[in-house]
Image (cartoon, rainbow, N blue to C red; front, side, top):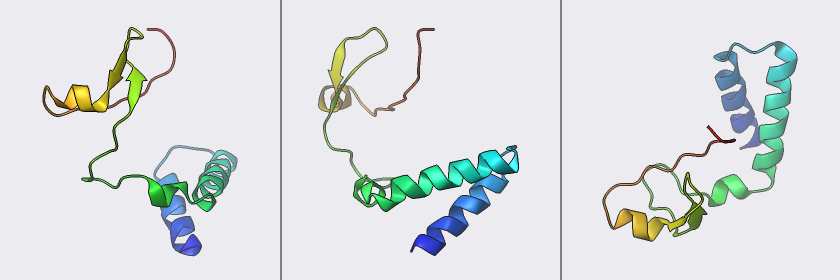
Length: 82
């Protein structure tokens, strides 16, 4: 599996406009994360995510379950204050 994952990462990183040394760092970081086994435990595309609570854009905690009560949910992550 590791070789298959490595091939997928290389293929994806070739599509990015990155210098070779940056692409190698990206590949190394992804493999380190993958080797922890966490990638095997995350929900796959189309699977339901477990309930969680995160702050919204203004800092108010919102649970996935509460948000889903109003319809489909898209979760995004961003850094900083805009």
